[in-house]
Image 1 (cartoon, rainbow, N blue to C red):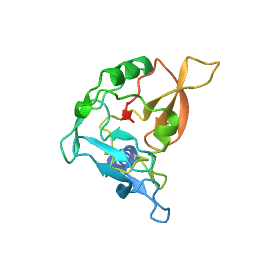
Image 2: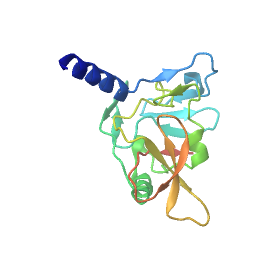
Image 3: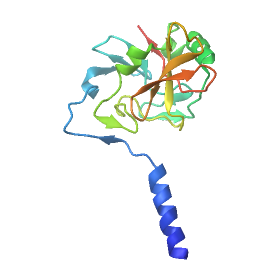
Length: 169
């Protein structure tokens, strides 16, 4: 009985520990060379010309890693936080739309579906990032969110708390 409990415990712990996994047979959609490190906690995507926070809102870039604890926000709070952000001395940060969020998804990887050399994994276990895009013209209670694990999108009620990664033009 004791051995069975140990085996079940090990299996459970192994199943909840996500590991960044990439398929080397798939061409990388967001190779590190595509991004310019601005040495201020931001990177610029040379394909889209957008500048992104390297870390999730609430975390700080220490020059090598994200430190601190990623925070979650409901959709309106996320918009407000974007308006008040002054990361890297810039004040024109905003919540990205869903197409912009999808542009940084690494299709060859999952858990997370980002290039972790450019966008280190969030310290928060919340699985989704807000976008500024509302779900539909008739449903103003939901907005699109992107899964950090798979890169998939789904509609989420705006009162839910999600992660935030800001962008600027």
